[in-house]
Image (cartoon, rainbow, N blue to C red; front, side, top):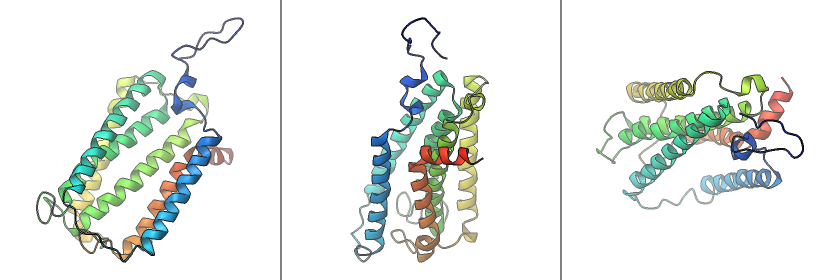
Length: 238
């Protein structure tokens, strides 16, 4: 995995982990960008929940399928590229973040199947609360994967790398991710009658979502954005 030692200048080959951005520590510019994104999210959230909360734009039926298709293609390609990078570097962190993008791609399928008015007036399956519940699991789940990536990225060298075969790692990742999505679908679709009311209609979330679910997802996302610094603080206290 590492370049062989030689006398004189250090040789860097294409196999050197430092040639991959996923293994580089964040610089000052990246940290400032993360802070700017967090502040922007807070500002936008304040505007949406405050001054702009009374504005209700008209429905755009083509927006959801176009947006979901773009998300599916983007996340699927990203997952494939990260799995390919894992096959070279074999780090557990890369396997986790690749699984995260695979998760976001696959969970779009049950989201679209339950979305009211997209394929059927009431959705192909599920009920009014299914779509909002899947959406919540979708965004909270990806943030957890990103935090896991940050925690594993700089752990002890003996635990950083995947020691089994690449095929076994990728197969385990795909199987685990598909199982998680299936369980979420089973809970949100099969158990829809037992879910809290997170949406009033297809366009409006209920106060329950804004007061309890949305804020926690926002917190997870902000922690995920700063996951590298979070991992350093976490591991230094354990």
